Length: 135
Image 1 (tube, rainbow, N blue to C red):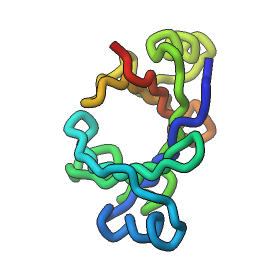
Image 2: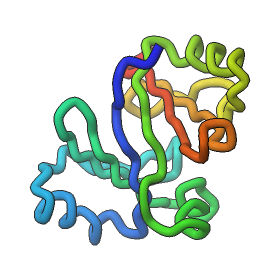
Image 3: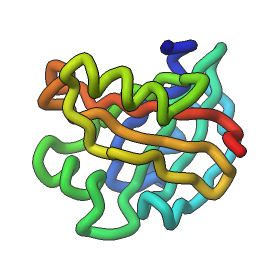
Image 4: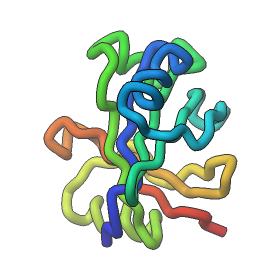
């Protein structure tokens, strides 16, 4: 079902101030920065091995990332696992008793399909599922 860890999302107050930590101090090259209207965030990507570290800045004070930072401060926000089929993965986890935050996947600007599992069902860890390049 799960293929690999796709990325680890890190919630930050300000991407521009956070980029130097990962790029300069840790020496991880930055791949790109873009804004996602679909999830109301600005995201910076730092590929490392087979996974990516994602810095996530809220673009809307009512977004989930903004609420996360208000409640918990900056830090690890979620772990994303790559799957073959997000819809099938959602049905699989739901059948196992996992509460879903997304009943249906959301399409991102790049074509990926994403969905989240409720952290109340996953030991407090927000889990994202992604089907890369879905048609």
